[in-house]
Length: 163
Image (cartoon, rainbow, N blue to C red; front, side):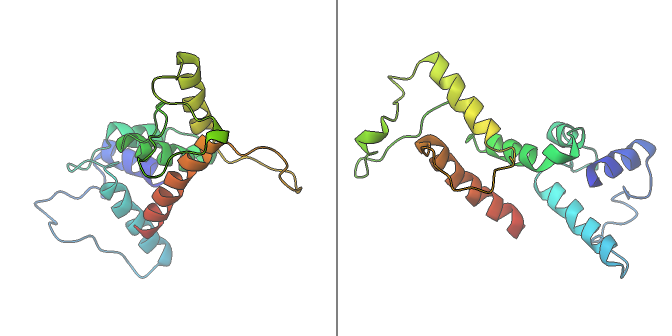
């Protein structure tokens, strides 16, 4: 909502985009809690570089703006992961003193085929989209790569909430 509102006001040179010369101070908000929430949301969007310094939208901001509402959070997480180079088709590297369990049969960069690289990336991207589960006990294998990937996703989501 805020990105669409921002784009509309920017195109019209509306009051949402004050010029730096006329109001160089910090943004102000009325006592309405919704206005304060929108102001904080805009500040987060600017900090995430989804709004440019000149008030325009960045390429990533335009992508997120045009994303369907139910996919905006997964898309934001995917964009942030891409910024840090964490959303890729490359397998995770094991540490010298902490090897992956052999029972996992986790691929290395040398043993990974192009098909498996594609599957890794596709699984990681699709795992960002929320799914509806049956109200039943989980009785399938746990994918080692997705478990490791989601530990990074959890850290990122916690950081975004702290912003």
